[in-house]
Image 1 (spheres, helix red, strand yellow):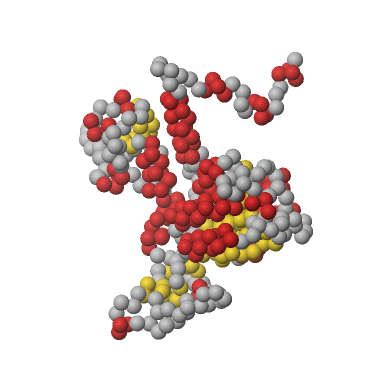
Image 2 (spheres, rainbow, N blue to C red):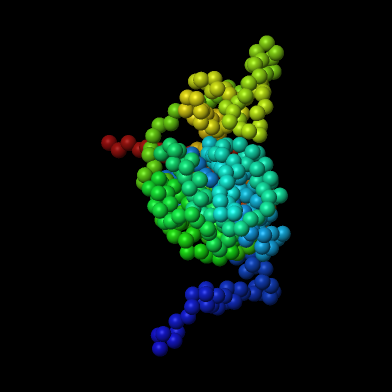
Amino acid sequence: MADDEKTYTWEGDYERTWEAIKEDEEGSLQATVDDIIHRAKRKRLADRPVNVRLGMMRHLFVVVDMSQAMEIKDLKPDRLTTTLKLLERFIEEYFDQNPISQIGILTTSNMRAEKLTDLGGNPKRHISALRGCKDKPCVKEPSLQNSLELAMSTLRHMPGHASREVLVVLGSLTTCDPGNIHTTIKIMREANIRCSIIGLAAEVRICKKICEDTNGTYHVILDETHLKDMLKEHTTPPPATADTEPSLIKMGFPEHVLNTEKNKQEQPSMCMCHLDSKDDKRLSTTGFFCPQCRSKYCELPIECKVCGLTLVSAPHLARSFHHLFPLDDFREVQRSTLTNQHSLFCQACQAHLKDDNVFQCPKCLNCYCLECELFIHESLHSCPGCASGRPKQTYIEEVMVE
């Protein structure tokens, strides 16, 4: 009898889903729809790890599938165009949340892997390279092993205190590799390289194996919106592993020379970033000069190729501290319980709070709407009420008992 009651997993997931939708007194479903949207938005914050050590410095390679499978039009206008468009937004958000991290882009097609951009901290250079991929043809099959080997050749030399990550956006259901990919997975695990994969078609066993062995994540998208959400999850640093080496990092704050004074102009020279580049070899008099060896660079953050000093700017370092001291979660309270007249307006956007549930900061007790609360925790990382006013102090009278 028990065997007859068992059903498939895909049947159980959709069992009695209609019971979650209920009409209000006027026969409208809008209240239920708003509640579903509300829970979906809050889910991103609820899934955020708490009291987990995160890495401030990240080195990430993004692998883009350029095989024939990316020409399929299940995503409009096609998979490749949609992926490149969303990756441009991902790179901007990645550097906004991780200003002292670096990213590089690889492509795989025709059973090979090609490095599009090296690891760097200039988002404009990566976005420009992605836009150039729109005109490239999608050829044959991808190669996961060649892509991982190419990324690993650079990541294995990264310092132990920084995270080493690979993110693969894969549209194909097959991979054509020159050797045993399980050997590559073992080497990646030993090198502490984390690999995550976002599938555009269906679940592939070898992809799941790679992510499980390297402590990465594997997701298969449902639509374009789901792909955007999956990419957004990778803007937050992953939890640091036990093998991550805690160490003091020597950093330099380079001087930015703009040559506004004619008497102090530098001689035209080439920056160390493009010294080995075949495409861009322009001479310039402006740039960031290493305080230790006076080598010139055109972008930050970067590691000096001459003396090995990590070069950053003060704003980059300050904006990275929200990973060390994350903002406390706001309390969800009923709007009807608020007695203060000022609490009926959002402290951020100053709009009238119309939802039944609002969010209150536990320190300054100011209230916020859902959209502002998400923006504060995901982008701003600072409570506007706490930042604009003095903290409320509680004075306790000490009574001496003799």
